[in-house]
Structure formats: C-alpha cells, structure tokens
Length: 263
Image 1: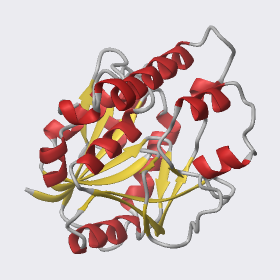
Image 2: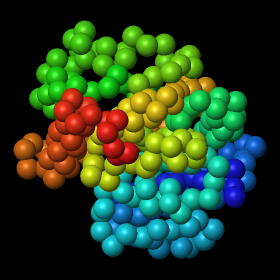
Image 3: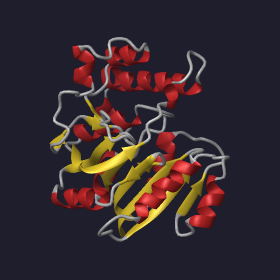
Image 4: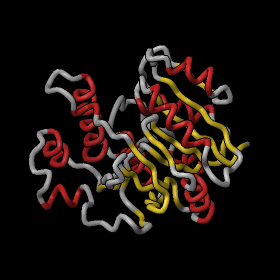
C-alpha cells in the first residue's frame, strides 16, 4: 500500500492537465505515492499526451463523460493509498501542498477531508469554503442576484479568516485529501450527482458520522476555475445537471434525511 493515491479527474483539459501533472512533479518531501488520471471521454489528445509524456501515470479511460462523482469513485476503487488526494485537472499545486496536507491528516485522526486554500491564477482568493447550500442560496446564485448581500456573503464565508486553519462545513472539491478510513465509514461519492453538489453531500454525510472537514490555508493550490455550468442561458446541459443535483441534495437534506442510507 502507498502512503498516498493522487486521483486527477479530467475532461478535455489537455493543456491544463499537463500543467497539473508537471506541478505535481515538483512537490517536496513526497510520500510514497501513485498517480491515477480518470479521463471522462476526452477527445482533445489528452490520452496521447499522457501516454507520451507521463508513462508512469495510471489511466482509467471512460468512453464518455460519466460525471464527476462516478469518475472520482472509479479512481478511489483503484487506489491503493492510505490517503486519497483528489485533484481536478484545472489545478496546479505548490511544492509543499502534499506534505502540508499529509502531515495534517497524520496528526488529526478525526478529520475526513482536508482542503487547501484555492487561489485564482492572478493570486486572488477563491471562496472555496462555504456553509451548506440551501434552496435560497441556489436560487440567488442561479439567478445572479443578491451576490453581495449579507446572506450570500455569509454563505460564501467572505468574512471568514482565510489564513487560519479551521473546521468548515464543506469546500469545493477541486483539491481534497481524504482519509481512507473515512471513505470506508462514510462511503464513496453519491453517483446520482452528475455534476455539482457531490462535494457538500459528501461533507454533510461525513459530519453525520462524526468526522471533521478541515480548511488548511498554508497549503495553496491554483485553480483555473471556469464555472462551465454558468455559461449560456437555459439550454445548457451542465446548468440543468447542476439544478438536478441541487434538487437531489435538498431532497436528501430536508425530506429523506441523509442518515437513512449510505449515500
């Protein structure tokens, strides 16, 4: 068994995936590890690039896009690491990210997920820590209204000290380190989410089981956050998928109850 399994999810992100993997090569004090790329049906030459430039990377190839949750689960099932480090292909990690997160997980056995500070390519902060979504936050963000009001600022945790380690409700899953014991206890991601809400869902389920979610800002990851679901207007497949995921999350949280089933 390895100390760490890094699982990178990619879909038609050849250039960004290459940058992600190159940033990974520069890490300091690396634990024994493996790297798994789960490709969701890319047609942009990503697979050829992996074969040529990163022959030691294990590749799970899907013939089509199976969604975020299912793809992450594919990587998790193949992983042989003590901890699982999930990355999206549009991320670049600093040299000390893995050693910082890994050391924190080793010292804090009650933590299921540890996440870094996410920044934009220009160095500005991304609000990656958030309170659990509600129907109101969903409609406000979807309709692009009220983003700067007190309610939304609280949801996006704009007043939170983003330079201090802290327990939080959940974080954007572009970069997570997860404890294998927590995965065995909580379960994997709910595959009925195709895109969106799989992250707060997992953190909510972990919290029910007594696990903590930790924000670790001294680990920094650059995230080329593009919000594909926000593009276009009504006829946008990802936007519809995101809405369906929101309805599922609210159904589980307010009607069915998360604690009745594993996922």
